[in-house]
Length: 150
Image (cartoon, rainbow, N blue to C red; front, top):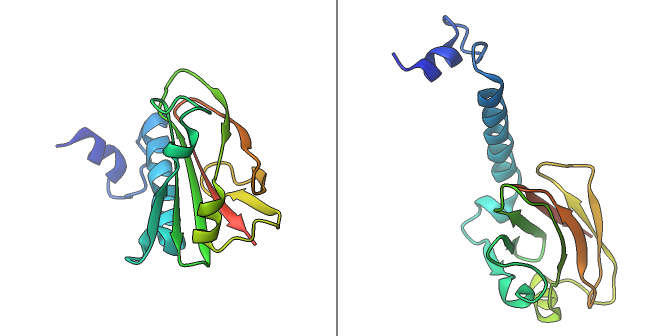
């Protein structure tokens, strides 16, 4: 048989009871990812769009290691993704969202918005203002997904 499947099957209990700690962590990650995709129209609706932010940030962070983009659904839901593909290093980064993107997203450049992390660290909140960089510490091999709170 397949050892990983047998560990998950756990003699018919189908509860993952014999999985290793790292296998349980990986399974938990994918459960969280699937829930995220299900919960946000910006991720599962055909009409959702993507805006790559690398063009606006090449001078602010190492674009070979860090990647940022926005997924949005109309003007009602915007998700900001910031990923660190470096396994070993943490980065203190600044991220710019140009004003022309604000208008595409239906955001008012005179207002303050809250960015609420909705994937890994649900306690993390940041402020979003036009013409100001977002600053955060990005751990190695980490992704943050922020929802714009209106």
